[in-house]
Image 1 (cartoon, rainbow, N blue to C red):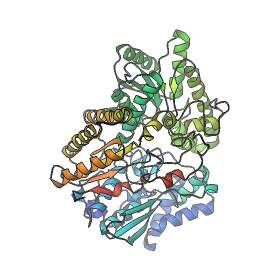
Image 2: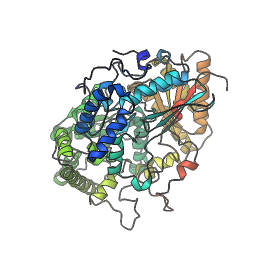
Image 3: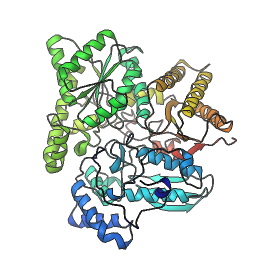
Image 4: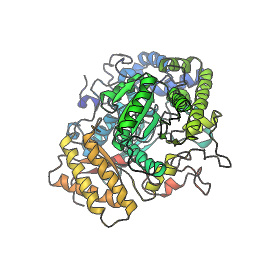
Length: 592
């Protein structure tokens, strides 16, 4: 077993660690299909070997070539660290600066098997949200951070450490860019090739920026989404007895189960993969699991009648669930669902993000690799059925929204009936959740404000919870009703979060606030560090889900009324989007 000191010592080369291959104790990413030419395969191998001295190339070349053949990427499984991957207390890291130690803590949290979706493939969430492209990059980055002083900056390029550069105390300690590709080559097929070559990677929003705090972040956003969907679509903040049907229990989508219960409704979440179902149930986020549709329908009816909050995981395909809900309406006249959405990884539908109805998760994985064209056809057929069922229920009173996962976009590409008559390219018959629900909150200046207590002590987190709720109560006096409602929702969230076992991985919390709230909470936490109520520095973070955080025409900037949804300047012109650097903001109790 490695120690943190060994992890900071650079690539283990003398001797090489034993090649233990892939562990059967953790889930693994789907096999990628980059369709490399023989010449490109040689280039991918050469790019992987550049991290190592020539003396070990002969040993590593064969196994790296085998990984590329078997898994479509060179992850370098031999170099998976032996140390248990988790967020250790900040003083455990042998660094020259606390800021570097904080980054190391956040990186190891992103790769914690309790947090990461596919830890050995360095995927934190979303099916392809990489922390690094391979394990050599992990070892080198940890070494650089250990050596870093407060007058240096580490420059990162799609997982690759470019190096430590001279800077100054007030400069960022880390600057990151991920997945930047010239537009004409920014296609899914080109990306798969470039990722296999080791020259770019998709860091999602908080994986490759080391800011992920476990699914708690999306739990909070989903709670606000469901609450405000109830207000907008159902005319009530009381969601007792209301049913929310969706899909996905992975790294981000797993939040839906807990969010439904906190919002007070009945959440029914379909998932084809048993591993995340089991994981969410063991965490206490899913109250029940069933693979029996009859049982699923009966539990919906029971909870509706009693108005009891429930999170029910259906082990099966969501298309089967939606079609069963249609049959129930057709035979009984009873609409058993009020709100609906989807959080399958439809941004990546042909590489494991969406399982076609009629296939198990294992069958889909095999077919995706062996017959990719047939798999693509089955995905698109499934999407058409998926939408057809939703359309029938929407005609009877279901309110459905797109959750920013490209579900409606891929359904349209599959030929499903999702187009809105007379609308533009980015508008469908169902709205984006940003357009109809969260956009009103963003327009008030509210967005994610997250923190991590680097001591790892739950008492520190509890102290920050009290500080944050007290601050929001104080500044919420004398503001407009709309702003006050947002403060109240977040005070409710903080109080509920402590009861609902929200922490997975680091001792972290999220809420939404405007600038006044962010500044006031940060100052109050800083004071608590200075006077000893909090034992160690606190990392402050944001993410993309913010005012002008992302130019994304099917999510944050969907249905912009002046037609500028495909323009990419708004994010750059509005200060505050930079999720890639926010992990480096750290409160240490210093005078302001």
